[in-house]
Every structure is written in structure tokens, then in C-alpha cells.
Amino acid sequence: MKKILKYLLYLIIAFVGFLIAMNIFVPVYVFDEPVPFHGDYLHNPYQDIDSTYWKCCNFHGHTRQYGGMTNGRNNGNAVYDSMYRLFGYDHVGISDYNKVNGFEDGRDPGFIPGYEHGYNVWKTHQVCLGTKKVRRIDYFFYQTLSHKQHMLNRLGEQNRVVAVAHPSFVDGSYNVRDMKYLSNYKLLEVLNGFVNSPEHWDMALSNGHLVYLIADDDTHDVLKVNDIAMRITYLNAKDNDANQLYDALLSGKAVGIHFKLDREEKMDDKIARFKRDIPYLNSAKLNGSAFSVNVTKPIKKVEFIGQNGALLKEENHKKEHEVFNACYQIQPSDQYVRTVLTFFDGTTMWLNPVTRHESSIIEKQRLDHISYLWTAALWTIYIGIILLIIKTLQKIRPSCFRRKYAA
Picture 1 (cartoon, helix red, strand yellow):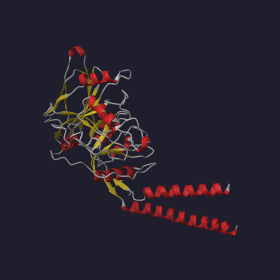
Picture 2: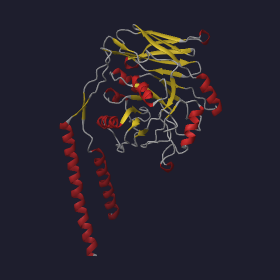
Picture 3: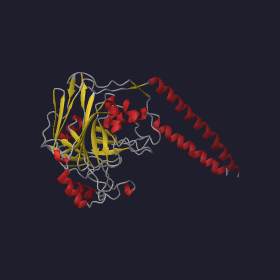
Picture 4: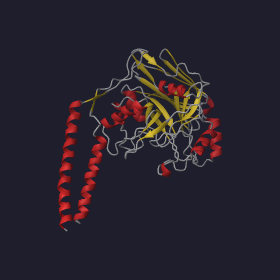
């Protein structure tokens, strides 16, 4: 029993030491209060789009890696690629866990190196695109706001685009209230094959963070009809070129599609329905403060959503009316307006927001600052714990050696 207790103590000490080692370089951040969108200038990311340029993209999906240990074990690289090509995707992205997969390099002219960062308990993950270096460090258990901000800052240094991944997937991952203060990330995965996260998006937008959407399958088995071609990002880019795709993502020239799922449907039927029924955005224009949207399919319902996720306007139509347009007069009190269109087959289209600014020169706010005082206090606690561990080990080991050599 004494040996068991001794080894258990060793495990506890090692565990505590491991946690400290993983967290010791995370500073304590303090955050300014956010400033909501304001001003007389209305910024519309779609004002000058060309409706013939839409590119069908997926950026978040997994293949078989690490000997099949991770979820994605049924997706060989070639199978993954070929299934998306059957649906007519222009850009096929692979985001394996903490590893850049180069299979599409040379196959996809718009190849973007990327991966999904994170292997913590609460699935606080990020989709990284334009990767220069894979970050191996993560914080395995509870993450404070400082942990999350520090990770976004570090990933931002190593990647061209960082997106907060599936924030609604696990309660305790990215909480809705986190989005009030977090900054220095470019995109939010509003539509994900497992879960949608409009509340997180509205919290960010309501607090003045100009964050655009991305929509992904988060594919783990491309041979399942309910795991592919469900959440799609359409980018307004002339060519399937990496720089043009980056520009479209970062400038908000993107729409997210939530394609209606039929779990009883066969894959061939879904491919045919996808190619036949996907709606496209023809235009989304501002004329003064009048915002008008035109699409390729009749609209069943349109929702214009604003500050704090409030429904500003809703319209419902009957199919025989075949309404292809939606309009909203932006009010002086509207700090942002985003649009969701629902079609008669249940498919929805999500648009990026029109936002208010003081001028056409838009600066994204940063709220985080390192508190050197609180960081020093935390490090003092860490050092104290480390010294206590060393002292405890010194007490345990000599007594063990005395008993061993006395025998």
C-alpha cells in the first residue's frame, strides 16, 4: 500500500508539473471594453462582386493520420479528394489535426496549407490556413480568456488566416461571452457540419469585432451522405488561386450555405441534387441605406438580423410568388445587419454583415493587453509550486534510497 501511495504521489507531482510547464509562458491579459460599430459609413463586402465568379470550397475536413488514431480514419487522401470533386468543389481543403497534409498540393491550383489546431479536452480548436509552422503546444484542460487570446495571438503569427472552429460544439469551449473580448482572429466557423454558432457570431459583431464567416463540413467520413456537402463556403474569386481565395475570405466576399440534409438519400442522388439545387447570390447592394439582395432561387423566408442578434425584419413568401429579392432599409440605429435566406427545400444561405464605420478606412479593434503585474504574481505562484515539488521529491527519494541500501 505504501508503494502504491508513493507512486500515486509521483503521478500527481508529475501531472502538476506538466500542467505548470504547459501554462507557465501564458501571460495574464486584461481587456479594454469593446466599442460597437458606429459611424455614418456603411461597409458592404458584396458591393462589387461578380456573380459568375463563385468558387465552392471546404476548408475543414480530416483524413486518416497517425495510424488511424484520430477521427478521420476512414478517409484516405485520394478518396477524400475524389468525393469532393464528384460534388463539383473547386477547392478541396484538408485540415488534419496538428499536421499539414500536402496531398492537394499540385492537384488543387488553389492549394492552401492548413490544419486544425487543438487537442484539449473541451475542443477549443482553431482552423489555421496559410500555415508557415504548426504549433504543437496546447492547453489540455480548462482555458481562461487569457489562454484563448494567447493562442489566437500565437497562431496569428504562424498562419495567414485563423478561424475560431465550431465554438458551439462543446459547452466550455469558446463560450458566447468570450466573443465579447477575444480579438486578433480573422474568421468564425459559423456553419459547421456538427453545429452552427450564430450566437457567438452575433456576440462578436455586437461588440464591434469585424469577423467574417466560414462554413465547413468538418468531414470525418466522406462516404457517409450526412458527412459531406452539408456546410459550404462560396467565395467570390475569379480563379481558384490561393491568394484570391485568401482575399475573398478576409474581405468578406463569401456566403455560407447550409445544404438541406436527407439522411435516407443515396450519395448519387445527393450529388445530383447538390448540382441542381444549390442557390447562388447574384448581388447584395447598398443604394444609400437601402440594402437589396438577389439570388438564383425563390426565397421562402428572409431574416435581417442586427445588434445582439435581434430580428430586424422577417418576410415569408409562398412558392407561387417566386420572390428572388429581399430588401431592408438600414436604420440609423442599426450597427450591423446580416442576412439569412431560407429556400423552399430547407437550404439556407448566410451572408456576411453590412457594418457601420466612421470612414472607409476600417481598423479592426484589439482589446488585449498583457498585465505584467498579474503575470508576475502568477509566475511567483508557479515558482512556489515548483519549489514545493522539488522539496517533496527530495524528502521522498532519500528515504527510498536508505531503505534500499539498508536491505
